[in-house]
Length: 502
Image (cartoon, rainbow, N blue to C red):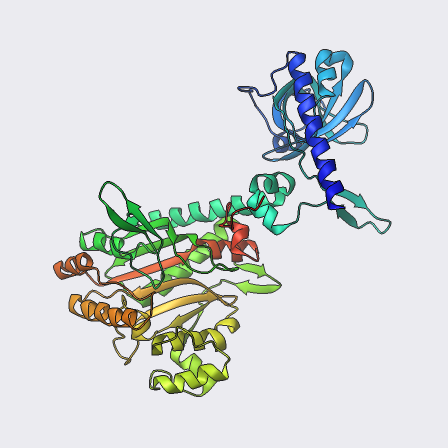
């Protein structure tokens, strides 16, 4: 059966090449240089007037053909949608014969006038036809059938997830609804910029290639710079460079950038991802919680005109104020144990009861983080600020001003997913050095995600950094939730994949 399908596909490709040769023999250039477009499918439909014969020039990909001897109908798809075109041999002459050598998937340009068919469909009567690109591979077009109960049934849909991610160019052609997700993504990012710019923050750029990586607990990708003969790291976060700019006197900076972490891949993780990081002097994490609520309210309202969303059949409401809970108290509610006051053996015992794999969990902080994930995280459906994390988990955050053993840090969770992380930033250079040294001990004990000592960053702090609030938001996860997509791969044009096996 599989061999028959492959042979059928090969025959279709062979026919396309034969059509290409025939078009060339007719003197038709199958790959044009340009075509002037002055309208699109949406504009034509929205602005149709019965009593006016409007001339248009449009271009698009052929998605359906209905040939009827000396006349034909076809549907073409442009960046706005589909529209029907009508072609007559008497008017097009030799180009009508050439149209017989064109297939679904070919890109054409047409000039003509807009009219409405007897069935009421707004269409374009073709007066000039130009071939813009001959497709040599058949595209998988879904067939729609309405059954006896009026339900739409789709056959031959391009639905294989792996193929869709690998061949996103075809996914966008045959599943045009996917395009809307990425349009929304673009609008989310531009609206975030609009909000931050209006607040007086400056958009900046920091190095992607770094001699030391930092700002997060993650393994880096390593590369080599030939001219300098040194290893460099793809950044795992922008934090330490953005804080240097606060030291330098900027009154608030942000960066929307690609970061890279050499870690596992799942529905919420891709090794290359988009982050927003911002830092505002003279503020703390309490101020930042209010800022995050305001930012989300602005983006949701501006892009979607609502604060209520459905994600995988769960309704989410981003209205202010969001719930605020203590990480330590939330764990204690579930386990009956204050994890800050517990020793590591007690934490290991709790982890075993929760069936947590203890491999690599060599510190209290790591155990607390895993226990939180197993007991609390999945229940945080509505937007929730989880506050005050263990000091060992947060080497770049200030110690809490009134609580022992924790720092002034929050993470925001929605539908069980962390979407942002924020601190009252540590600006004491002596405390920061001690934290880095503790991270070195954790690294020596086997934690390959522990922080390195960054002497230049410490030097910057020694010149003096004002009290500062910092924030990181995972753009990909945010887009997932706001557009109701189940996987991070559904909101990244070209997600990381294993090499294709031919």
